[in-house]
Length: 465
Image (tube, rainbow, N blue to C red; front, side, top):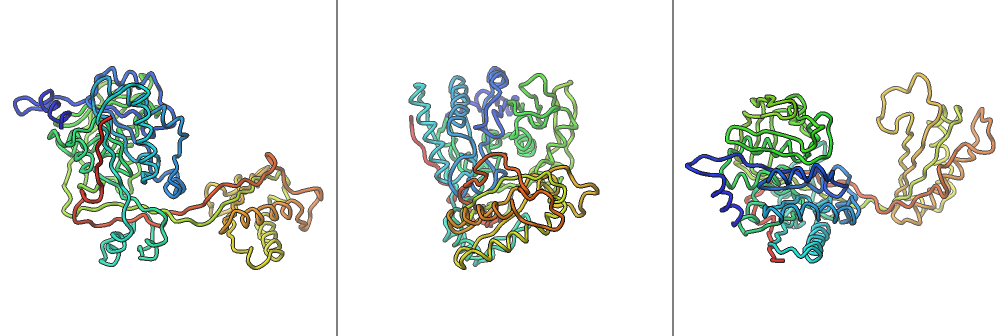
């Protein structure tokens, strides 16, 4: 409780709370930190520094494999810079969604980096780690009891879905971080977590109103993305009883009322409510007022504690091994005929493979026509050239690569009515154009689970370094 007690002494007097400075070092740690902005942030003497490290945005592979999105070198470098700054000021450092997916292997890897950094830099502090893995038996029991519901277009969860998942995590809220802070943690590395909880847990323990606190946390978790122009620079939130002030640590970025209000809607399907494990943030009465050309003050958000605790659960299931074919064409006849050429080649390849080798799926993305968006109508004028990405997923890499290489060869030389270039239909950016892309996963669980209590789901482990 040392940080909590000290901040109570420093910030609270006569029942009034002084402004609390909260620094967001990065919205996605591990991909490089703008160092001048980070230094400016620490120069402002924040009371807390936080950083998010992951989300579902990069896809299910990181959760499924237990690997990190950033390189290990990049992740360790970023963690080291934030760690040194926090220890120099003796303020809490909180990192959420460790290692991209926030599962145990990624939490362990991130914590190991912190231990290495402590040894290398001669730092001594109390480290807390918070696990977020959900036992399958518990999730299956919740499914049987009708306490799990889908979100984001997912279908209702079944016990078979739970059994087939390779890994399941739950998204912790402020409660778990508060337990770690109460245990005297100087540095907290958490598994899968709500971005807001990183920044809201400590102010909540100090009695700052949860409406403004959560609203500030919702915005600063992406660092300077809420600014004009948006960026990755460190962001300072100054929390007051009635609201908060936002300021980028890069003088070239401006937090304007419009840009801040727009970011309040970021990643939300409901423009007025943000649902968290601990309650609901409502921003429909929020006010955004410019302090000056670079800062905005926000007030008016409200908070309703949850009557029923919930946890968003995320699970990844292996689909198979993936091999990718990368190629392109500038032949207008090939481009015009892709709708018939690619299926014809696929049928031909499958006809030549033995029955046990056709257990694969192929996904074709035609960049230049509909590779990014599945447009409802074709373009009026076909593009001059098209890049093709063909993804093959099979039970084994050998099967995926066999289908990929055969398809490459027959697509290259496929004859079609009106063909002029008999020497080949495709161009390749490099050879070999077949790329073994590792194991393919899908998000099989993306649901809300009602729970009786939050604390048992997210155990806190403390160690002194």
